[in-house]
Amino acid sequence: RRLLFLSESRGRRLIAFHVGTTAELIKISPWYHELSARGRASEIWYSGQHVDELSGTLADLGLPQPQQWLVPVAGARNLARPADFPRWFARLSATVWRKRRALRERLRSDGTPPIVLVHGDTFTAPIGAVIGRRLGARVGHIEAGMRSGSLLNPFPEELNRRITGRLVDLHFPPTSTEAVRLRHHRGVVVTTGANTIIDAVRYALESPLATTLDLPESYGLATLHRFELVRRADLYRTALETLKEYSQRLPIVYFAGASERERLEQYGLMDLFDGKNFLIEDKLSYVAFLPILARARFVVTDSGGLQEESAHLGIPCAVHRARTERHDGEGQNMVLTGLSTDKLRAFLDDYHRYGGEAALDAFRPSKIIVDAIEALGN
Image (cartoon, rainbow, N blue to C red):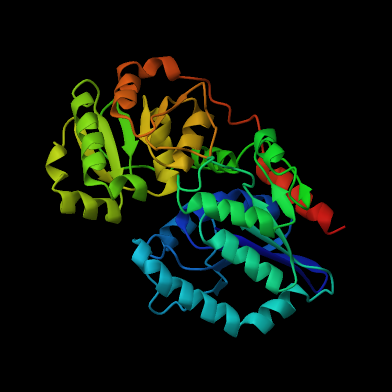
């Protein structure tokens, strides 16, 4: 998902973050602030997968505007559907090819071997790894070693992770569980102790934004957006109808972006939201959303990031997916439903039993990553 191109410029190491989505911006923000605190220069190189939310997200997270776009700014638009990907990939490839000499020269400006870091499980990770190797760089992967155990669930994320793991020679897995999976891979493994999202959660809660939302005093929170669910009208309807039923016991706030609202309209599901117990709200910026998440009694989601955030905050969480590559909260505050309505109902009937303690100060993975990167430069 995100690429960091590291080089020396006039004796000062330049770290450039290549990201394309708001989720990636959220996860690089702790690194950016950690580097700034150490007096290190850094840049953001943007691939333009999310465009509409960019300015607001940068402002909320205290990040600068991208110094470089790896797709032409003119005509850049959000990737809302799988059909949008080929055009985006073609524009990205053409731009990187056109700039290849400049990128290679920038990476090698101090004569030392450059490093490219990729993150996560979107197409950007394996694509970035290939780009890094073609530029003659060492390639590292943040959030390495995470696996669901099935190539098809989630797809293509699981495939992207496996391909990336074979291309890189620097691995940054969150925990020892992921590190063990990398024992037969080439290169260096540095365990970070947790996913970098824990640093972003801490930052957001320390710098909250005021919200104008009129929310109930006590509520549950839900988000459902993954293709494996929303492409199936029957599964999507059943999940929302179940939430609607349980919202009569405790109000539930459902956060939806433009693509989810489009699906809701397409399937005729907007009437499920009554504005009193089952509420629908637009997605918020990360810094505005986290305090609302922290107050929720429970979470129902298919988001891996929200699963991690709920685990760090000790909030009961049902992950409504067939499989998950993440183990945050497993056996404690998290229940994987396997897309089973019965399991979702069982969670909602007794969500109190899954509560836990917040553990935001237990790990600082961004510091570990930056320490390792600096050590590689010595």
